[in-house]
Length: 276
Image 1 (cartoon, rainbow, N blue to C red):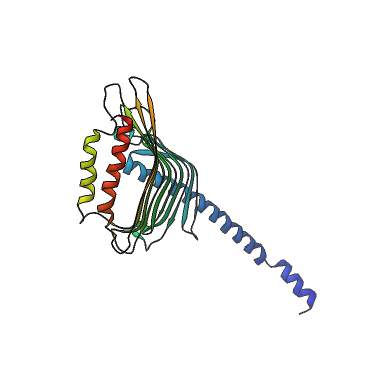
Image 2: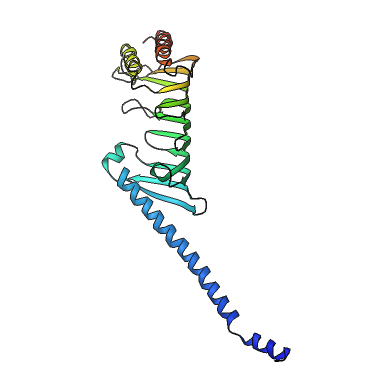
């Protein structure tokens, strides 16, 4: 067969066209499948959140990567659908969230990262969870209980739990409190309850050594404490700037004998300055 004849047959062959069409169909199916899967996944997540928490979410943007096994959400809002949810978290919003999945981990989740969380009860700048390793929160505000205004009761700079090798053992626990806002409402009640009962609560929490976790390094820091008297409008501010540190890897429950007395000494000084 001549070279010219071969070129003519090749030019007339239908396979290049068929391959192009097939490739185009595959691309269309992949794109369509992506959007269908995205819609199904978004609805599934929405249904699960509503089922578990009584919140109906509205997701601004959702994306996922099968290769990285990651799900990302932006501009998330969840509206309460039950009276319990309304009284609890209320409307929840989040600027950004990422979840990485791993079948070998408990619940199939390896990592969770959330930014810009807001709700009726609390807000947080960042929350990071690494399964079996780390739980941390930055810039968290816990709102006042009902009857004590709309402000925050605790302004927390950071909370950090770094897991040890065994269950109930932590390499590091850190609680950095920027401010504690005490409020005496118009009825004369304090949002923290009776200060005289505080020692009993602290002693009770630390006395059960069998239930207390083992902690190699424990840090508790408090910046300042305020007292607002709603009836008079008077605001007292007590700078504390005190830090309690206990580091004893050889005896990781030693903090139980150290932290309680130090906290009570600190709170007695604060109460005296506030007149409680």
